[in-house]
Length: 397
Ligand code: PMP
Ligand code: GLU
Image (cartoon, rainbow, N blue to C red; front, side, top):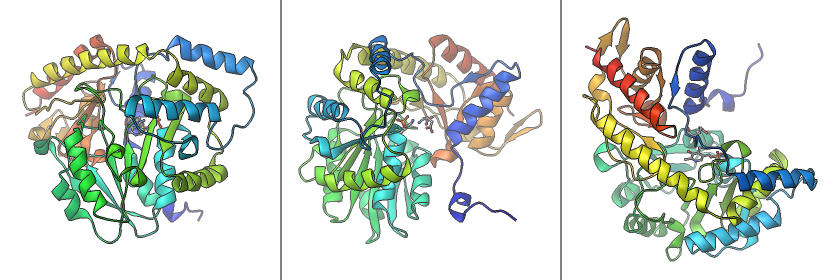
């Protein structure tokens, strides 16, 4: 019988995308579902960025671009890294791909050998372990739970490192928790990393601009760290451009060259028109970024306030991204109307089927006691969704 490869059989589908898909199917059946599952800004792409894309179509940006992206875009990214992160990169140390997702995958594929260990603090973004498995590596999870504000300590990192450790994947501001590592915390992690010669860090900074505690800090800023850091970022979240599919990597040139070789065989350069749109995003007026950040901050405050008002949930206050990751384990073992809640997936499914609110169970993020709410939606949707969640949970006995 025809069989998929072992490689594919080892892979789990994306839980975030699966939950979003399920909520769309329910909507198509006429059920009024509020979708707080997938993490993407609800805003349209700003007009000046759209105008740049339209111009690019008219100017016939319709051919293959260079594999790492147009030089103009890479120059705009180099300028962004200098302006916003005070980091010096050359154009050859930057490459663009189909979203930050492909950048993460490129980096993992380029660095991880079969049997190598990759440290992933849990909770983590769903795709990291799957990409590591695809590369034949072993994900090593470090539990950084609710009680430690979902942040890994330097001691935990040190304890997880073995001679086989190749990479650490660090996401700050974090999906799914919204936690943000401070400059001092990053410096302490950097000290540990520097003690281990063959260890690299993939710094996923895609939520850089969605932050509520001042400026984002990059681990690449510390002495001796740029050589070991692969920064991944992109336009999806900051500029409401998820569908345009442009992400970038900034890393030592030999890593970028390796990823370039991989991408040249795999997908080629990213969409030409989207690259021109991303170039506009990085070079035009940045006012839209702050406008959206302010909206997310207001929604964060609203969601936290309403969640804290739901008996049985434990809620921390996220400092970035647009997710809340409350602890829901006090509901495990409870029932209502044929539904039994034994874990976070049951919990999320109950909220979807009974409350008609789509969220994602924490299991997929490596924390089986919590669930994720994306509050990248209107205040009205947030109010209605939290009301439904409260009512659905009140029925559980
Ligand atoms: N990293 C994290 C932590 C994310 O949440 C996402 C979500 N989309 C990505 C990377 C990928 O972003 P992109 O849309 O640019 O592929
Ligand atoms: N990163 C977003 C999320 O976590 C988008 C979905 C995905 O790419 O997994 O919901």
